[in-house]
Length: 157
Image (cartoon, rainbow, N blue to C red; front, side, top):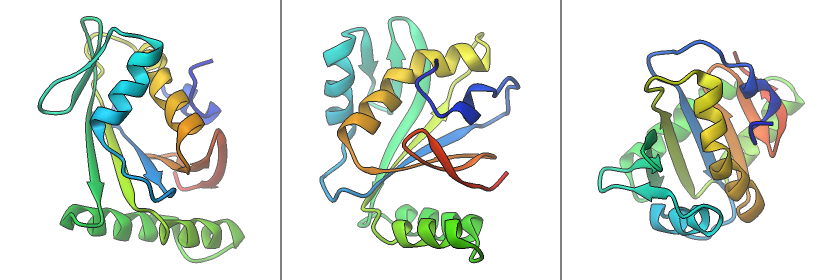
């Protein structure tokens, strides 16, 4: 188990860029240092450098960034996610409503290095475990769709 929704576990190719987003809905501040503290509580080998690169031991795993309603990029991302969700069907309606309550977006660009996609996702599983246990929100995966916890609620790919 990768600690990610099942649909993501099958990602075997190495796309040039693969983004995962945690769409935080709980209204509490979301910051990289808080996420890192949560990760280090389970594994002190997690580190975050000044440009948002998350490492675990010597493995560079992802580039991370948090955007909030105060950032121009936040509005752009929400708009793009709304377009992707579409407007038809009950599941799209649920996602559209929930996108309206998002207060922060954690964008995670995976860094494949010399690993398979499965190995990279496995090394990152504590991140998703921590977020899903400690924060309220949706997970969005490029080419997959929107997840509530580990359940795909709207496929978009």
